[in-house]
Image (tube, rainbow, N blue to C red; front, side, top):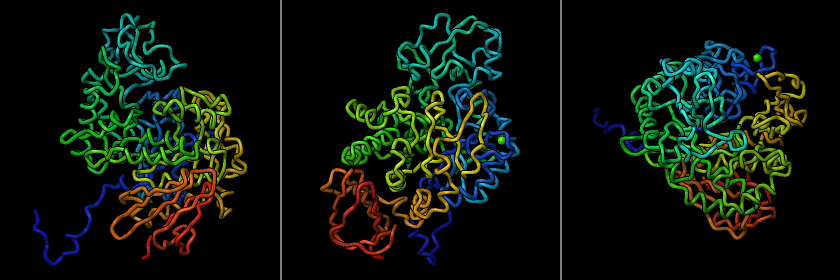
Length: 540
Ligand code: NOJ
Ligand code: CA
C-alpha cells in the first residue's frame, strides 16, 4: 500500500466516497410503454434511446428497466422465455448495446430486472422438462405426484390462482408455482439451475448493465414444514451472487424485491462475510406514506422512519411511492387498511390482491400540489429514491385493463402523439385518460407544471449533498400534519417542512433560513399551506 503523502493533507481529510447508488435517484421504466420508434405501437430500445436526453435533463441518475426479454408477456415480461436476448418487438441485443452506450455517455447507469424464481411455461427448459423424468431438464422445475406438499406456503395471487401447484397433463405430474400457473418455479436444489442463473448474471454484466432489481427474492427454495419464504438456502444463494459481483464486477448493484416485514427484510442485506443486497425496497415505508397522505397525519410516518433500522453492511433503503404493481397493504394495520380503501378505493375496480391498483396521480386526486409534495418528500428522505415513469407528469391509469396493466399506462409525450401506442402483445394499451392535458410537451410549456417542480427539486437535490447523504433528525411540530426534518452533511443543513395535513400549519424557525426552492429569507414564525413543502437552507 502507498504511504499517505504528507504534501497532500487535503486528500487525507476527504470523506470516503460513497458508492454511486447511495446518492443516485432511480427512474423505473418499462421499454414497452415508453417510446415507440417504428410505428408498431410498442415501445422499443431505439425509442428509449431517443428519450435519454429527457431523462438526463430530468435529473435522474439511473434507470431500472423492467423485463425486456423474449416472453409471451402474460405477466408483462416477468414470464421469461429466454434469459439471454431482447424481446423482438423491443429491438435487438445491438439496440440494447447502443442504448447502454448512450445512457452511459449521458452519465446514466442502468439496472434491469432479474427474474430468478420462475420462467415462463413457454421457456424451452420447461417445454423439455414436461416431457417427463427422463428428460435432463425435468429436475430444473419442482414436481409432485400429489400436489399436496408445502401446504404452509401462502398464495401470493389469491383470487387469480387457487393453488401453488398446477397439473401438467404432458408430464402427468403437478409443478410448483408461487405466481401465475404459467410461471413454473425453477428448482434451486438442482445445481445446474444455480450455475446457469449465475451465468445469466455474467452475460448481462459483461454487456454493461450496472446491476439488477432481483424479482421475487424470498421464494427461491422450498422446504416442507415452512412457509417457503426467506429460507437460509435462499440467503446462501444470494450471498453467492453478491460474491460474484464483488469479485468479478465491482461497482455494480443488487436491489431486492422482497415484500417483507422490516425484520425479514433486514436479513436480505446479509451479514459480515456473507453480504447479500446493497439495497432493499422499502415496502413498509411506501404503504405508510399513503396512510399519512390519507389521514393528513405525519406522526405515524415519523414513528416508522425513526424506528426504521439502519441497514447493515453499508446497505441502504430503496424508497418509492408507486411502481408497476398494486399498492400492497399487507403490512398496514387493519384500521389503516380501512382508511386507505375508503380514501383511495372509490372505484371498486381499484382493489386487487388485497391492495390498490392505482398510479400516484389518481391516488392523490390528480392534485398537482399533493403530487409534487409526495415526490419532493420521497426525494428528501434518507435512502435512495425510485421514481415510477410518468409520475413526474401525474400520468393517469386505466382501470378497464385487467390485473395490473392499468397502472402501466404508456408515457404521454404530447397531445399529438396519442395514437403512438396500440397493440402490445395480447393487450391493447391506450393512453391514460386525461393525456391531452397530462403530457410532457404541455407541461414543458407551463413553468408552474408538476414536471417543472419535480425537475427543479431533482436539481436542487443534486446541488445539496445534505439532501442526498445527510444525517436525518426529526423535529417536533405542533401540527399533526406537519413533518419537519433536518438533513445535515458537514457544514450544510437542509430543513424540510412538509405539510401532509389538510390545514395550514405554523412552525417556529430557530434561526433565519434561506428558501432554497423559491428564494428569499424566512425567519421566526412561518406558515406552511396544506399540501406544501418548504425546503430551507442554512446561512452560507
Ligand atoms: C414481482 C413483480 O413486480 C410483479 O410484477 C410480478 O408479477 C411478480 N414479481 C412475479 O414475477
Ligand atoms: Ca416499436
